[in-house]
Length: 174
Image (cartoon, rainbow, N blue to C red; front, side, top):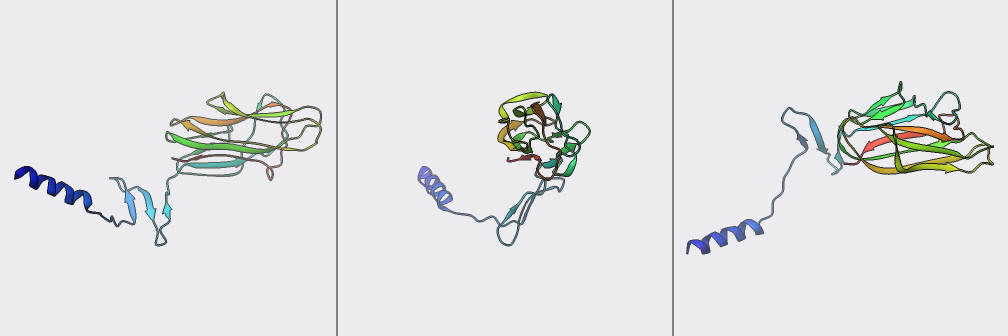
């Protein structure tokens, strides 16, 4: 009889559905990690993100791409305009990438994305010589640890200095 009552209780618990009604989820010190608005949209206010453009002079090979124009960031991500890199605050899966205008008619232009100073496998983008200006881009998803940094590097050719055509970004997916 005792075993039968236990099984009945387990079946009742399994068959019961629940609704959890919350507007905000916070940690124990009160930092909001998630908000659900009246329309059902989920907002994550502390999501790390950063974006910056390249400004200044055109850059030739073996130079980091200078990021320092139209900078936006949040969620603890640092856009370091002195060392021209983006530094992530927490470990996770990140989207990284760039769109860059080239400035080279005599040679191919190649740009690499680098993690902590080392080229990331499969992160190069290249254009063919012949056009004065062309756009190249690269986008990927990568695991990063806290304090890892991403930078962009001109490996061949030259990139153009007009920040209206250039964009470099890093943001946390989860």
